[in-house]
Image (tube, rainbow, N blue to C red; front, top):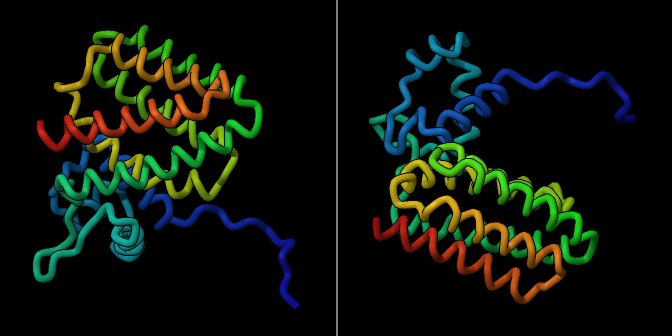
Length: 215
């Protein structure tokens, strides 16, 4: 008989390594196209190569690393087609999240999202902070849907989005325009306006694609 009530296992070393590598990729410490050297990474992380390889394999399965035969492992380099595909996936997840939110307490959800937009406006002059708040807004949007599966699906595309945001910092709209853009989406959700929320989200994604692909 299978026993389900048993001591919980602590997070494994490969899981911790994978999480650290995801953050390093998302925040630009490991640049797009960079090669990952096992010996150097093992030394920096203070781990043996076995767990490191397992952690890197997880990121390969997620599409954040690519293995090139006879050369090694590399951080993905987002091509225009990759960017379009990533935003296609993000848009699908976030539209589904909005639909779920609108079936519940959309007023509170919208107010929480508008509060993040207010912080974006207050962070004018700090592109890195604004970029992080942009990500926070969209992570919160999906989290407010209360769907663990949507959140899991969103995770990899958000890391790829972080990579794109680093590339976009110099071409972003002025902070007040970006804050207004996010605030408008939050207000549409707060007011339960499904048509306006979907239209604003699609326009937001299309704008990001246009600036990334044509930068």
